[in-house]
Image (cartoon, rainbow, N blue to C red; front, side, top):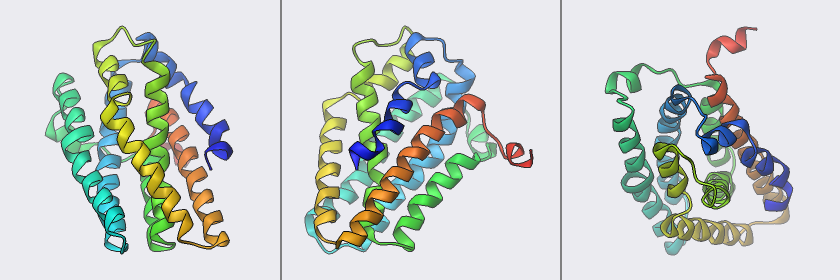
Length: 217
C-alpha cells in the first residue's frame, strides 16, 4: 500500500503549503483556515477510532483504538487548542466556519469505509493520516521553520510518542490485512490510496481557502 501511494505522498511533502510553512512564508490566515478545518477532521477521526473498535473482537486492537481516541483528545487536539489560543481563534469562529468540501468528503470517505465496508477497511482508511504526517515531520525537522508556530507543528509529528503511535497503527493495519481475504485486502489498499489522495487535497484545500462556492463554477 505504501509503495502504491508513494507518488501522492511525495506530492504532499513537496506541496506549496508545506514548502511555505517550512520557509516561514505561509500566510497566518491560511494556517488558521487549515486549523479550523482540521479541528472538524480530527474530531471525526477520533470518533471513528471508537466506532471501529465497537466492531472488533481482538482485545489488543480494541484497546489501541480506544487509546488512540483518548490520545487525540489529550495530545494532538490539545496541541491544536494551544494554536487556537496563539491565533485568537474564538468559539464563535469555530462554530460559524463552514466545513470545506474536501474535509467533508474525506471524513465521509472514512465513514463509508466502515459502514459500507468492514472495520479492517476503515482501519486502512485511517492509516495515511498517521503515517504521512509522521513522514512529513521527519522530513522537515532538520530544516525547521523560522516561525515558532509552524516549528511547533513540525515537532508534533516528529516526536517519539507520535512515531510510536504510527508504528502501532501500521502493525494494527497489517494484522487487519491478515484477517481478511485477497479481495478485501485489495479494498483496504484502495481506501488507503484514496485517503492518501485526500491528504494531498487537504493541503490544496487549505492553500485555496476552499469553500462551497467552488462547486458552482
